[in-house]
Image (cartoon, rainbow, N blue to C red; front, side, top):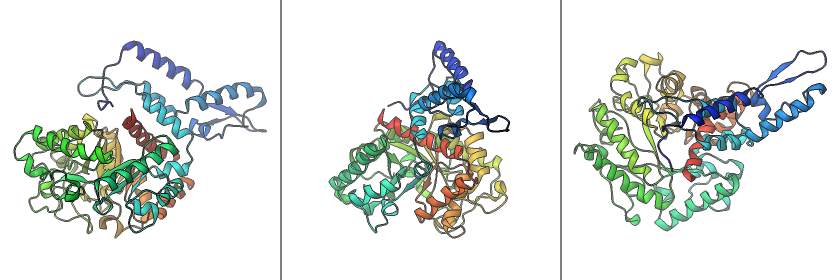
Length: 451
């Protein structure tokens, strides 16, 4: 498995890929001539859905058939080809390596229905998937629900995890079914930070060591201590069958009264937090566990807790960049797998109470574009009070996707949220190309887990 995304590429490959791009883009637009109408451009995204079929004029029929065959074979959108062939420089001057997983991911997407694509954007509990009160096994109820809603991820809590053998069996069964039915994995996630956030190690039946809080360990000022702690966690997560840990906490603790974060943070120095968070990530990566920085754009300066309602940071964008955003920018530069967006309100940036999760200004403009994050953007739990007390489940889900989030975590009332996103796509409120871009990132990350 390759975790580094930035390696030098030989120049002959660059030339070949640029030539491929030139040849392919020359054939990605077809023209349909209908009675008495002018030619209209048909985008590649329509071609993938078969819209171009039967719309070509007779005198262009052979050419259109050839183009359709090329599209069926490659199943890659124009911007995906550009992303594959274009060299982008990192701060170290290294080049982005061509990764065939992107092409494979695009080929999967070309065969998926919009319902399947939208399902990939949800990371929910097994109870929300199945509609049952408690899930401790993955039998017919789970597989039948997964057939209907092939969600992108399942997140488990202490109540789901009774014994090591039971947990292994449950995760193995659902993973095997996902691979059998869709040929790529499902994300299986858990919150196992250390300290007071331990879903597994808090149960003595599992017989694994309890990792101290990151704030306690960080006091030793040694990144190797953090790396070793994450390595310990990664060993048993991998053994049980998990592939995603919603950790580390990359918040900078700037408010001593903050109880929601407290000793979950590595501390108050943003540069130390950045280094410690990446050391933690490296410890997980050694065992094939994807990591998630949280809670963008920073929850360490708030007094309130977003579990209960609105929580505020009154910093300006300049002040955030000096402190809270430093670890997240470091994660963007180093290639962190996930970044979780919090429900914190930043009125001096957004001009109101809107949670960061639902703000395109913070998610797309700042995190995706300005900070250059290329990984998966996931919301914090959509069942938390800062969202659920002010927005309906469907409204919040649509707003989060419109803001630029790739995945919705623990969407309250899953089916209404899922259907609301589908309706928004059908009504043109969300472009299907935006869904495709999110799902491309999701499936590409999943394919890397199997490489």
